[in-house]
Amino acid sequence: MPAYMLGSKKPRIHPTAVLAPNSTIIGDVVIGPRTSIWPGAVIRGDYGYIRIGSDCSIQDNVVIHCSAEDPTIIGDGVTVAHSAVVHACRVGDECLIGVGAIIFDGARIGKHSILGVGSTVLGGARIPPRSVAVGAPAKIIRRATDKDVRLIKESYRAYVEMGRRYATSGVYKKPVFLGD
Image 1: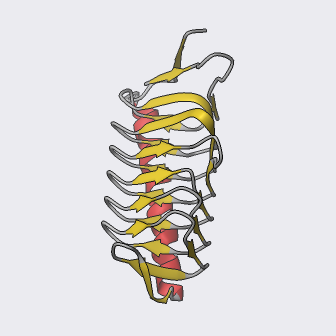
Image 2: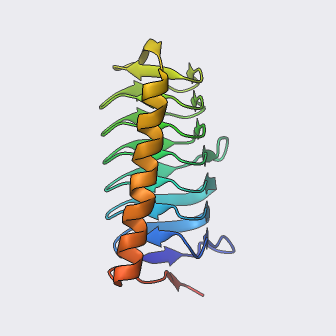
Image 3: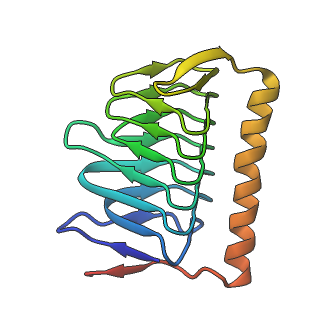
C-alpha cells in the first residue's frame, strides 16, 4: 500500500484509515479517520490537492485526481463505489457515488445525494443536496427520501466496520512511504 511523496508533497493519512496494499496514494492527499481505501484505488494529488473526510469508503479501482484549478474534496461519510472517477470536484457529506460513475472538473454534488451507476456529472454541473441523479449526463430524477439517506448511512457505516475487520485481522498493514 504505497503512499508516495511527490517533491515536498506528502500524503497525510489518519492512523485509523485502512489502506489496501495495492492502493496508490501520491502527493498532496489528506485521508481522514476510519476511511477505507480498497484494492486498486488511485488517489493522485499532484497538480493540486485532494481531501477525503472521515468514514469514507473509496472502493476498488476508483480514481481520484485533481487539477491545478480545482482540488478534489470529498466530505465525511461518502461511499465512492467500484471503478468510479472523481476528478477535480467536490462531493458533499454522506453521498453515495455509484459504480462506474464519473464526476468532472468543477462539479459539485450536494450533501445526502445519490449518483446512479454509470452516471456522468459534466464539468461545472451542480447536483443540489438530497438529489438522486442518473444518466449521462446526469439528470436529477427525484429528491432523496429519508430512506435514501438511511441507505447512504448504512453503506458508509458498513464499510467503516469492514475496514476495521481488515485492519484488526492483519490483512492490511500501515502505509509505507516511498521517497522519504
